[in-house]
Image 1 (spheres, rainbow, N blue to C red):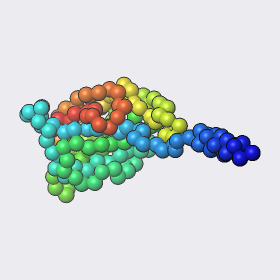
Image 2: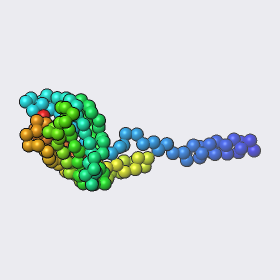
Image 3: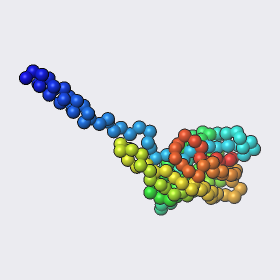
Image 4: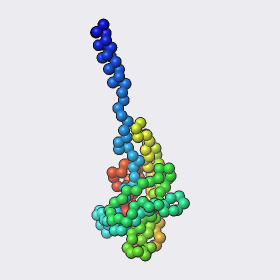
Amino acid sequence: MGKIKFLFIILFGILAFSACEKDDICIGADTPQIVIRFYDILDTTQSKDVQNLLVRGLDDMGAREDSIPNIALDSIVLPLRPNRTSTSFILQRIVNINDTRSIDTLTFSYEPREVFASRACGYIVNYDNLQASLTETDPDSLWIKGITIDSTHIENSAATHVRIFH
C-alpha cells in the first residue's frame, strides 16, 4: 500500500507541474515610434543639434497638443497615430520670444499594419509606405531645408527613419 501511495504522490506532482504555463509577460513588443535625426545642410553626413526646438502634435481638428518641450537635440522620437493614416507635428526653432518665422508643419502619411506580437503583448502596429510632407509658414524661413526618408517601413524604434536637413 505504501508503494501505491508513493507512486500516486509522484504522479500527482508530475501532473501538477506539467500543467503550469510560463508567465505571460510582455517584454519589448511595443508599437514603434518614428525616429528623426537632424543633419547639417552643408555637410549632410554630420548630425547637427537643433537649439531651442519645440515640437507640438496636431490633432484632427488642428488643435495643438504638447509633445516635446523646448530642447536641443540631434534626434527625436515621435509617436504616430495607429488609428489614422497620417500624423502632423509643428516643429519650431525658437530664436527669440517673438519668432514666427521658424515654424514648419511636418506631416507623415503611412499605412498602419497590425501585427500579432504574442499572447502577452497582443497586437502592435507597424507602419508601411511612410511619406513626409513639409508645409512652411514663411518661404524665407531659415529652418528646415530638406527631408529624406531612410526607411519607408517602421518596425522598430532603434533605427533612423527620417533625416531633416537644416
